[in-house]
Length: 262
Image (cartoon, helix red, strand yellow):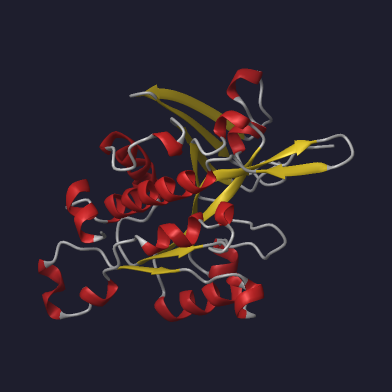
């Protein structure tokens, strides 16, 4: 039985030698953070065409979520794939009532929203980029599919990009609660319509942390979460939100952004 993973670096591991035609893998390490960048340059492979960046760091439950090295590592990679100007809509995907699935909503709650501040004539003096944040909730709660809600918002707001934050699934215990993946291919939630440029009409970047893992028990696959999942979600949401804020508001320091969103 195949074990599912959202992490492209696990599908095309650099240590396994050759990769299929149309896939390029690059690795690097700096300040104790490992980077694996997978570029999928054609359709028809195990993941959609796009860039997938995985940052491997210490387990989120044990790190300082305001550590500038970690924040900057994620922020710099986000800045490399997001448009340089224009409104960014941050969408916190997931169900906040389920701890392992609450990363998206918890992160969106801490995003520094500025769209309402950037609409007047004085906006040029604010050093701020317009940002909006939204946690659509589960379809079972609202009766509305996430894709439907984001399509409506994207049509109304016409953002330069939608940044979708969600919990991910890994096939590696070492990445559980200890990695970040950024993808330019958008997001494909389980049993739900894809959130991509094709479906939303604008660039879609996905950001997430693996919080669940499938294990093959022989008879069926089990989905497990770590026992410190509460701490992982709390600190991962704090770190990711700071990284998003730093990526979108580079004129502000990490300390200033922490103060503005506390």
